[in-house]
Length: 479
Image (tube, rainbow, N blue to C red; front, side, top):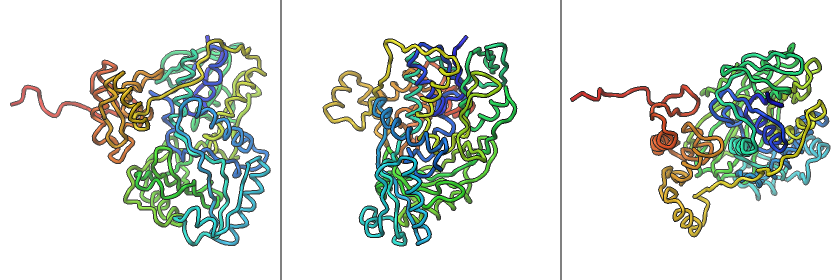
């Protein structure tokens, strides 16, 4: 019997698990995939938004501001890549300059600090590669860029070290309430808990309907992206937005924490977890981005991808305890600024659980920090020390990103082991470079097979079923 069951191990579920891990509360984090952070969390713009866009009085406005501050603190504490580079919303007409004024006023109401409107001269001085057609820009200096999957993994790893149970490959198929206990049916048996936090992302409405009438509806919305090589990573210094419209914040151009350039997304209604890309969507992204930054060299694109937003018609978060089912808390509609807000939302979820009866007793011997070896960023002296300590750090496996065998082995044996090639990539960047794993992928697969003592053919690319090896090309006895 658990005190709390969290359904969904994206950034929201991992944040809640991290906060509950601080207390003597028996908690389980349930995820249908074979790793944390493999849904929307790994496929988004990777921006910690400033908070000027949400309408004042909404949950988005409330949690965006708090999350902007708290996420930065957590990234420092948990050794997660983060850079505060600020954002610019660019206007191309006098009418759009009025939009900048409105956004600035809205941001100030929401509590966004130090916003400024730049004229054309200031914009061109600070961002010479932004279009000469731009007439002004709104600066929000508190905006940051982050590695969202690394943040989710860090939160979940610390939670596991603080005795939160993690059940991967476990899909929730039904929920029943018996007196004061919830019985959660899964493909791996029944999980019993006194409280449930529904953080199931684009499937949160379906999980809610296992126990309740429909109270909100997720309308999945797909966004497509380009990821460009590091040769394009210094083209702009800030996150560059165009003026937002009814479809969202629009197509952005931004550096990533790993030194690349990300461009996107578009906005398309979709069904389920459809992360396919299309020539139509990518062409729209490309043409729209070139309006902001004409010099983007899309020949340097190394990957296209798509993510799915958990959008609702209300365009706000749905965070509440169900009126009919005490202890059942929904966290739905976590579209942008969901990544920016998740850590702050988790703090309030813990308060809600306490208000509804959960006893919170602070834990002794709490794990609350984390350190990751990143060989590429170490000094020559530190590298030498690490190699002397463990010779595997002297073997470069991913040449594009300078990732060593020691880092890959670490990733495989961390509190939440990496069991797929992409799980290794999410933890230490092996395969993130220009060749996208073309050279290092087979070697990473061999290392996983060796370290986990599993057959090579059983090591997937990412999710279970994404097999790389399906059989031998020749009969072993052939001549």
